[in-house]
Image 1: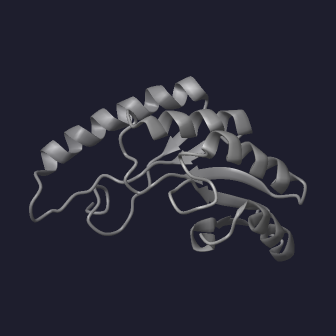
Image 2 (image 1 turned 90 degrees about the horizontal axis):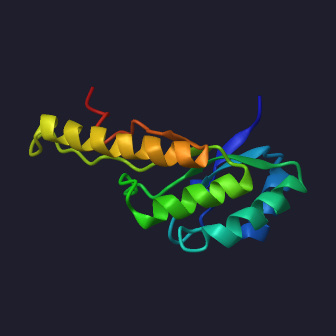
Image 3 (image 1 turned 60 degrees about the vertical axis):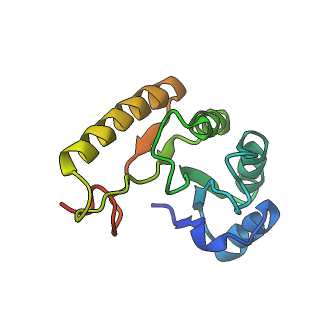
Amino acid sequence: MKLVLFAKHLKSLDADALTREAEAAGIEGYDLPLRKGFAITPDNVDKALPKLVTALAGVGCSIPMCTGETSLADPADPAAERILAAMTQSGIRCFKMGYFPFDPYKDDYGAAMSRARKSLAGWEKLAARHGVTVCCHTHSGYNLGSNG
């Protein structure tokens, strides 16, 4: 079993610092957020992600999973294609997509489920094209799936 850290709380670290931190802490892997304000963003993912993967490999660390913006639930978003393509190039096979907002006091459950199903079907096609598994995280709060 590998010790993998969700790097959400390391937002202030650049790629070099993430590598040093992994080595110092004995972290074997990162679940790496690909979000605005982080070292790797949807805008720089194509160049920055492969470099980080190489640097981390040098200290015995990998990236088994990447996590998108919490709002990245639409596979038609151009960021989705860029991210999955960069992950494929970097050998990363799991991606955690964003959430489907749902307010049980205001939203129609059936309509929300219909939108989610359509989105998931799109993610399935995009994931198959890139050889990546897209994961749907059931998150607390006003998100579809947390209301089961």
